[in-house]
Length: 306
Image (cartoon, rainbow, N blue to C red; front, side, top):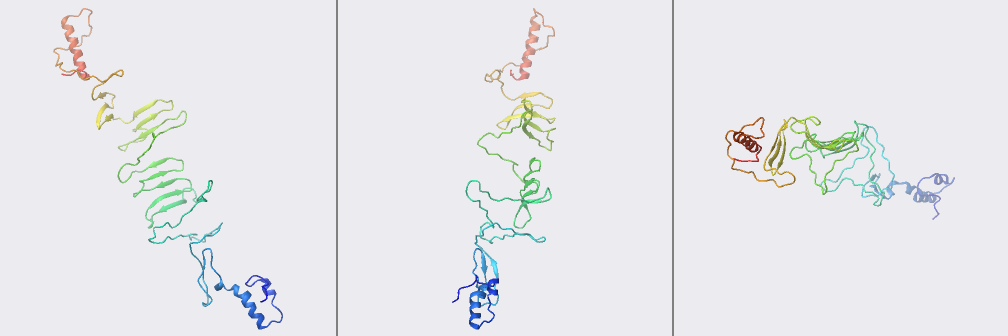
């Protein structure tokens, strides 16, 4: 058989090589060697390309199916309002619809998304299968939202970097489990701390502030016009009223001494009184009045008991 003058198929070389006078033998060879290679039904699919037709069918269909490995780069351009790439997972397979793997060595990257325009454009939108609930949304200006089962119940951050945790359907909004202390820090001259506002109170005006100011002074600041209670074992230990009075529940130790037990058995002194000008040589009655007044005062402070 005569060697092919070009690759199989119709090319400029094969068409220009048609002789002025040709016979049926030459024509058969031309079909066998050249035209047969141009028939898509004789093609062999590879790398995800499938050929559904064969030589016995009048037409052939070219498609794409997996698994397949395609060497990039690949560019898919959208037309009109259509989605340029739609990936449908296998129903009931328990497998992900798509997975992206990096190169597996140091410096290899995964997915780079460049989408979203300011506030109005989504760079990422993750929703349930029915698209009735958006679980995660990232916009072009950098603000994002994680949503729970109800609206505004998750974590969100605006473009300026302020983070808000919404009200959950039940339970606590944030639980932190850490092997080390959870810390809050700020730069020189700036305050740092926790700001807590319950009962519909307002941050910075009627909230509870725990932290340090810009000079390093520590604060436990009840900003609301309400009492401040320090508790242990679900029991009040120190109560500071809104007006400033302090009540200590239990014994009180001073100068690193263990709190003494209350001294009892003092009864009720008779005729206690304040001696306005206590003389250098008081009478027995004046001493009795003054000592009785001191006992009453110590009982009122809780140091003495009846």
